[in-house]
Image (cartoon, rainbow, N blue to C red; front, side, top):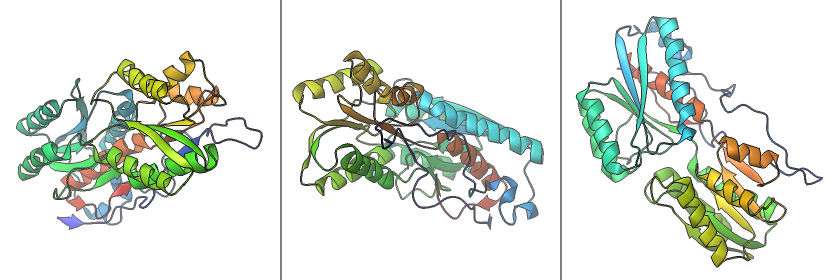
Length: 334
C-alpha cells in the first residue's frame, strides 16, 4: 500500500465558543456555519499529494457509519459522509454508499451486533464512534482481519487497534477550554460548579471530564459541588431529572457545565425555572438547535461546538483513499 500524508488540522480541535459575553454583557453568537470546512484542511479526495498517481476504485463500495447513540447530533456526520460520497462518485466515477447505524438503546451489545452484521455483509469500510473501547475493539480487529478499512471518529478505540486514523476533536483541549471559560470568564475565579458529563466508558467524554477537573483544581476558590453521568442512552427527560436533582442538592451553585450532546435537557430545565444566564450560569456543548437558540435568547451563557459534519466528510475520504491504497499518516483533529 502507498503511504501518502493527508494534510489535516492537527493539534487543538476546531472549536467555537458561542455566546461569549461582550463588553456590555449581551451574548453574541458566532455566525460560522458548522458545516464549513476550515481553509487549511485539504481533504484527501484528490488534493492529497500523490493521489493522482493512484488508480481509483470504481466498483461499488459500502461504508458503514456507526454511532454510540441515536442522537440528531450525529445527523450532520451522516450528511457529511453522504455529501462527500457524491463528490467522490462524480469526480472518480466511484460508486460509494454511506449507511449510518446505531443501536436505539445505546447498548454495547447492540453496537457489537451492528458491527458483526457489517462484517458478515462484506462492508468495505467502517467509521465508528466507539461506545465502549473494551467491548468494541476486538470486533473492530475482526473487521480489520476480514480486510475491512476502519477509522474512528468522535471517540476512539483502544490504542492497540491499528485503525487508519482517528477523526475528531482534541478532547483534552476541549475539556480544558470549557473549564477555563467557566473559571475565567463566567466565574472569574470564584464559585461552585455542577458538572453533567456524558459517559464512563467513551474515551472522548472521559478525557474531557478529567481535564475539566484538572483545570478547576488549579483554582483555590472554585469547587466542584457535584458531577453526574447519566445512563447510556438516557432520555432528555431522564437527564432533566438528573440535573434537577443536582440543583436541589446544591442550590448555592454558580454554574452548570455540560460537556456532551445532552445540552437540550439543561436548556429545558433553565427555561422551566425560568432562568436566564444572569440568574444562574450554564455552559453547554455542541450546536443542537435548542442550545443555539438558548444562547441567542440569553438563557445560557455559551456552548462549545465541534465540526461533526466534517468528521463525516473526512471519514468518507479516508476510507475511500484506503480502498485505493492511500493510507493516512496522521490523525484528523478537527
